[in-house]
Length: 70
Image (cartoon, rainbow, N blue to C red; front, side, top):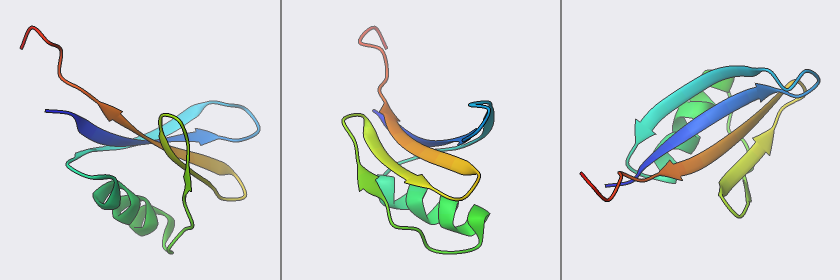
């Protein structure tokens, strides 16, 4: 079954800074990011999941599926 991860990247350097998950739903990932940032955020839909930016960090959620051989 596919899981949702929230990945943070520093906006200026593009260095990955944090990964949260796995979660069952995007809503769970959004709630975890809100807790990590200390506030609710407004997410935008993307082709791969959802995205939100703070002044220094870009968060992206993506669904990662299990391989077909599992």
